[in-house]
Length: 281
Image (cartoon, rainbow, N blue to C red; front, top):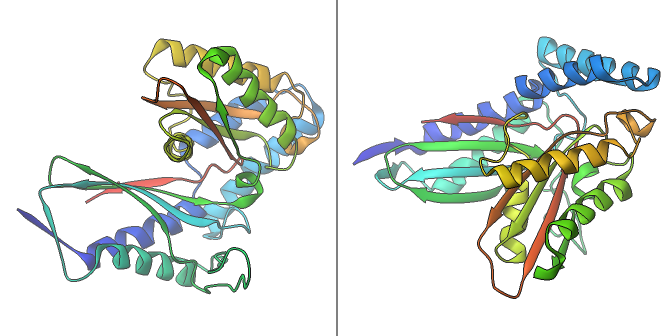
């Protein structure tokens, strides 16, 4: 059985959150440049060019892409043949987050009590951690600092099976239309279909981390992704909500088996930065 120290876990988590906040993903930059070439609106072109410039400056000067450096969210595949040594697994992750947000000069945005006191925890913990136990002796980390300008535009709905494909499509497009300029478009939209309402929310969030340009492996869902993306970009909201052809960079759908009586759908909206990073130890 392979041993992995909590110190190594802490270091990886720290590095990933600094990286995600400083360095835009190459898939996102590639898509922004592609959309800049295709955009017809002058304001849209100007804003896309500014976003690209902003991302380059952030990476070169080692500063945050955006002032909202998000809540720390992690999706972890934990190999079942690993033994964690040196301390508590979750605490190691939270310590990595603490150090990333302190040493990386990242804004701490976490409040301990969501309703009454709303006092800042002052270190951006606790992180939101999803763990999937898998075969093997590796730990795979996917992280996203999730800002709330876009998170606040996310929605969930319990459709009925009869609503079908059209019901899902209409709900996702409606969500983008209601969101308008608020989530800092162009957005990446994750859609979770199936499971229970909480499972749909989880897979919708994870879908926002999928590499832009990679479609769902099921051709039916890939077709639906393409159709919804086209409909959203016909809304004319455009970059920063000032009009144009580029309201969304991607629509990523994931799905899970569900109950015979249900069709849960969650739409998780992610801003143009679509910050994510991953590593394996």
